[in-house]
Image (cartoon, rainbow, N blue to C red; front, side):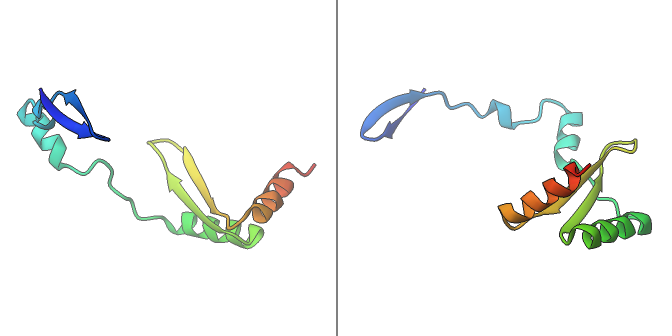
Length: 93
């Protein structure tokens, strides 16, 4: 164990780098591989983003998640007034 000073007091801490090393060749390959690859957005997706942006007056982004139709919609909102306006439109009956 190594000691380190925090606010003038000595504290003991374990120093092990075992968690940093891959355990097998497969782990080493996975460590070099990017975790997610970005897919180019289709023309339909870009058109839908534009439609949402025009309807709400906000920057919108759609990101496909997983293999099915699961999609993440992100809206860029500057302040709480814009957020209130979006909530009002979504909850209107």
